[in-house]
Amino acid sequence: MIGLTGHGKSSTANSISGQEKFKVSNSTESETSFVTGILTRWQGRKEEDPIIVLDTPGLGDSKNRDTEHIANLVCSLK
Image 1 (tube, rainbow, N blue to C red):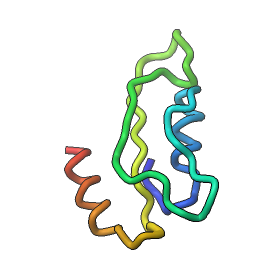
Image 2 (image 1 turned 90 degrees about the vertical axis):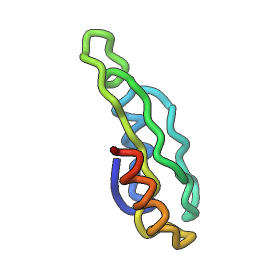
Image 3 (image 1 turned 180 degrees about the vertical axis):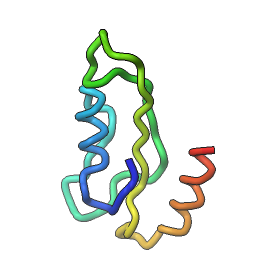
Image 4 (image 1 turned 30 degrees about the vertical axis):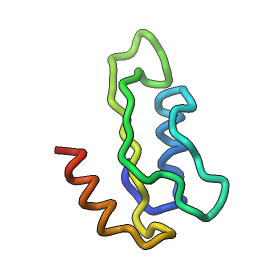
């Protein structure tokens, strides 16, 4: 998941995995600080092939950490 802060990346990652593995913010403050991921199956269905779901810090971070987050994102995706 890559996108703006507060636009539902963590919620979408939880929906795709069928689990509540990614912490979701209930405010305008950024919640995700690091790239995190899980190996799962589409909405937890055992008959589906495994997928990797990655959640990333949002762009337009409430603490002005975009440069730091982009550098960490690039390293994590390598």
